[in-house]
Image (tube, rainbow, N blue to C red):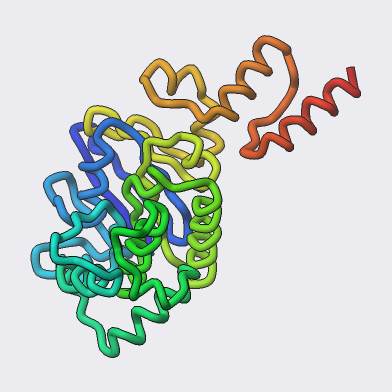
Length: 263
């Protein structure tokens, strides 16, 4: 399922977020853009979900197709993970049949043991809580999944596990995934396309690899450059090494080795 924006911001941008892709969002007003994509703010331009224009008449139905994974407040009366899940379902107005079965199925999808439902919610690590939040969104089987600052506080092992899961559900279930994050390294490694936001306008967009190769252009506009891209850029400039931009340091080393061999 794709999202199309027409006449976004004062520059009247038209933007297409492709289905079955992972799109990254970065910039100073990315939260406002996330609200727009999750249909919680319709003030900017026209929004189409699979060529269906979002209106006041159909917004509730279309919003059900979008799952927003974001930081949630934890009510004081929550004890177990199961309490937290049920409260989140109620607050998100998720209406499902056989809720216990759907919850258990979602737990299996994210690879979390069922016995975690009985765990004290406050005993979970930050990474475990993030997985629970993703699981809650998956219960409603959305077609578009938006992760807002999801990777903050997640350790590397869980990060890789989550990305493998996102890629699996993207490919297996044809989901459209959007990652809004300040971490340029995560965006560079894991997304297919990028949208850069500045002053509530689309500053730059394109494939992830192509956009991040414009290092000086992004740096001048105060966007963070992924470490591996910065390293490659410096090597190309100062050492005159003919290497390509990669998202794995081992590939860069191979390029450098080939260059040295040839020289």
